[in-house]
Length: 69
Image (cartoon, rainbow, N blue to C red; front, side, top):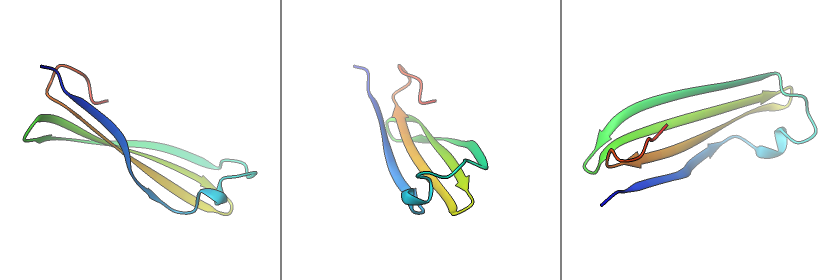
C-alpha cells in the first residue's frame, strides 16, 4: 500500500505584507529526514517584500513509493 501526505504545516509572518508589494527576495530550503512511516521532507518558502517576510513550511511524508520533494 502506498502512502503520501503533503500539507502546509506552518505560516510565519503576515500574509498581508505580501499583497500589493513587489517581491524583493524569494528562497526555497528543504530538510530531509525519516519518520516511522518512511521519508519526510520539510520545504520552506520564504517571500520578502519591503513590508516584511513570510515563511511557509510544507510537510511531506511518504512510505517511499511517492516523492516528498
